[in-house]
Figure 1 (cartoon, rainbow, N blue to C red):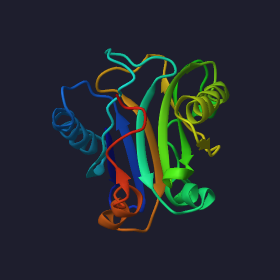
Figure 2 (cartoon, rainbow, N blue to C red; figure 1 turned 135 degrees about the horizontal axis):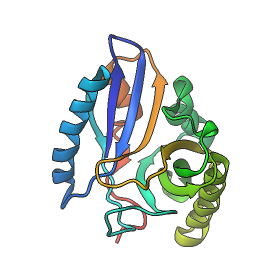
Figure 3 (cartoon, rainbow, N blue to C red; figure 1 turned 45 degrees about the horizontal axis):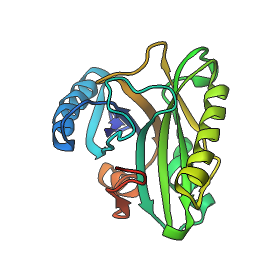
Length: 211
């Protein structure tokens, strides 16, 4: 589940956080995630802007995601060129992780990558989980997996080369744990910010590779 926050008071900086929840349905997952997000906002001095996206981790049916698992995916239709798409949605505003993956060592990481599906005029945002010695190793493993996914497992896809890494720590994530957190600066007001980055109207609820 992805939730979005703004720093207080009135700082032009926004945070997206993705957490893992075990639930029987999207509705149940949202019912669990939103109170948690509101509590986090109160503890950390943030303004909770709302739930943005949900993804069912169809690759696994166990409590703990494991090395190499896909933990988040979102499809969005767009006629933008790959360079412009990545810049518009993922690198604008100096986007960066809330953790410090480059200084972290052995542990669990997540890496966000983008796959272009040219025939569908769609881009897929994917986040995968890695047990690695370093951020560089996690990024390398994610690139190998992403290229295999795009070309061999689904077909006609192209990995765009973007790799945004987040360090989780020593313990494998479970129910309620944060699995990805990124921040960016923006002068947009919250409604316009959400529309620009998370609710353009071109997002798809379906995901490639679902059962």
